[in-house]
Amino acid sequence: MDISSVPGRMDARPTQVIDRSRVVEFQFNGRRIQAYEGDTVSSALYASGVRIHSRSFKYHRPRGLLCVAGRCPNCLMTVDEVPNVRACVEPVREGISVRHQNAWPSLDHDILAVIDKLDRVLPVGFYYKTFHTPKLFWDVARPIMRRVAGLGSVPDAALPEVHLSHEHRHADVAVVGGGAAGMSAAIVAAGAGARVTLIDDQPTLGGYLQTDPRTRVGLPDMPPTPGHQVAGRLAEEVAASGNVDVLSGATAFGHYEGNLIGIDSGDGMVKVRAKQVVYATGSYEVPLAFDRNDLPGVMLSTGAQR
Image (cartoon, rainbow, N blue to C red):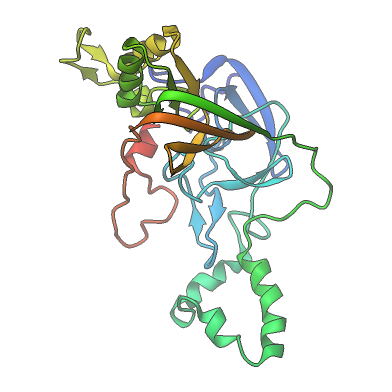
């Protein structure tokens, strides 16, 4: 089946990372969804017409794609019985089962959305102040509130056993951030003979330039070049360097005494001890404040670009 004609599917463009020659099928709430290799769960659902991806924690307001980078809670879903998976960065795989969370009976028609109409009488922290005493009242109200405000459910069946690794590494220079600045820093340091560890939380290097088709001028040793090609060329230089060790899909979560960097690699923890640390983590877009800025269809500009 040709899914390129699906109304929500963008036309081919030079910055795309999907492979339109390979179709992958998965289940969403019992419905068959077809996607391309390289899609994320959320991008495939959006292309299939799914606009509401979750419901808010407290008022059950509809939530749609916002950052498309795994940095907000708008797309948390249960994937193969694992709750709270960030669907906007979770790659599609053949046959996976995806379910929504925190909505009943469906995402589009959540009966608990009525709470949103009562927001004036439900201020912040109302459940602690209103139901805290007498104790019997709180004992009754607490499990109900946990059920209503929960984000995902612990599966009844045991999940497959997971083995996590614990690794120690040493580097002359640790670079946190795999965008243009981070890759450039790694290349320069490696060229000076330093052993470099480059850490990035995305599956591929390049940062925002990966989705940037604009022509960049004035770059050293480069003619005017589209942004996504600049990212690709820098990534090739990093890969060609024998002194750069790349940790992709890895999140640096802490910088401790003695330049110890704690890293969640996805399948374990990596501790990197470096002589010098370079932070090139880029910027985070802040959403504008206006009424109903949290509803589906309102997206960060960087999210729309991704």
